[in-house]
Image (cartoon, rainbow, N blue to C red):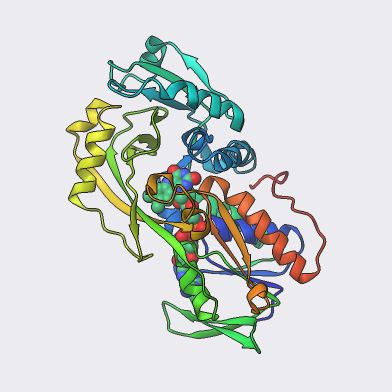
Amino acid sequence: MQVDAIVIGGGATGCGIAWDLSLRGVRVALVDRGGLGAGTTGRYHGLLHSGARYAVTDPETARECARESVTVKRMAAGAVTDTAGLFVLAPGDDPGYVDSWTRACTAAGVSVRDIPRADALAREPGLNPEIVRAFEVPDAVCNAFTLCALLARGAEAHGASILTHHGVDRFIKAGKGVIGVCLKDGRTGAALELRSRVTIIAAGPWSAQVARLAGAVMSMSLARGAMLAFAGRHVRHVVNRLQPPGDGDIVLPRGGVSIAGTTIIPTDDPDDAQVTDVETRRIREQVSLLVPGLATLPIKHSWAGVRPLYDGEVKGPRGQDPHLWSRDFTIVDHSVSGIDGLITVMGGKLTTFRLMAERASDAACRGLGIAAPCRTEVTPLE
Ligand SMILES: Cc1cc2nc3c(=O)[nH]c(=O)nc-3n(C[C@H](O)[C@H](O)[C@H](O)COP(=O)(O)OP(=O)(O)OC[C@H]3O[C@@H](n4cnc5c(N)ncnc54)[C@H](O)[C@@H]3O)c2cc1C
């Protein structure tokens, strides 16, 4: 099969690119070795960030989240539950953080409303009655599987091919340039060749591994995070702790469960899916400061995912504490290192997937000589 563009990875980023390119009239094929959302996307916490969490420590990401969360709520309404979010100062937390946080939120374009303690407790009866202060922010919950399905369906309706359970085994090259991929069907073992003018790697934490198959050297900084699901909806909002990002400081409602997380453990292995007893204890202990009922409830499920962060930002001055590693993203056009026809997108958050897809699609269109502008900001997904 010959297409204009191949997208490797069926997470939020890859599905977003397939949707974006197909709206621009590009013939695109998306491939994933598993199902849609099989990677980090299907293992994430579930939060469509307002940007408030990153306002102090990662202001550029906060600004992007503030803008993108508004767009995603509008264009992917079927995947989003607009719960709103509360930031809560727990007993013993540093009250001195509040002013710098509210100032940083305002600077990032995140609307913050100081609400009386009594109102917060009435709206969120499971909250710790000893909370000191509470603020409302426009956080929301996003179902990542629904999001990927909407994006893929929209792309297919505009002519895209979606090939799940097809992993990239190797790249087809002409000289040093990439002109396609060899795929293996994970269910039947059958081989398939796809040819394209440009190939985009959106393989999340596996991106460096996949790029290596094309001879491209990239380094990433991967970080695992664990999540716990408690049976029942014990919160109505996304409840965040009003402190610098740490372990077990968010709990949110998703379907019939309450999901608490997370941790951040540097790892070299994109398949690292372990949840240790230490992490489980740590999340439960920390999140119980916000919602005390979670201290003794049985855990229904636990799982982990690996954050696909990239090295450029991580090695910066804030590089030591992984909680402060930047969630910014980057687009690498490998023609700068002599490999034509190959682009990689790395880093970011699920919340910023649309912007990442726009930038990656812009780069692909430059290579294809296509001038059509991005339309995902104004085209609702149905
Ligand atoms: C613990 C945790 C909690 C998080 N919580 C949040 C949150 O609440 N809000 C938020 O905005 N962000 C959150 N994130 C970040 C967010 O989940 C990721 O940034 C986002 O999901 C990455 O999506 P992606 O499409 O780039 O990568 P992925 O979802 O990992 O997609 C990559 C895809 O590539 C495929 N692939 C790999 N190798 C191959 C190959 N050889 N051939 C074909 N396909 C291949 C994989 O199967 C996978 O489906 C969290 C991350 C973690 C780890």
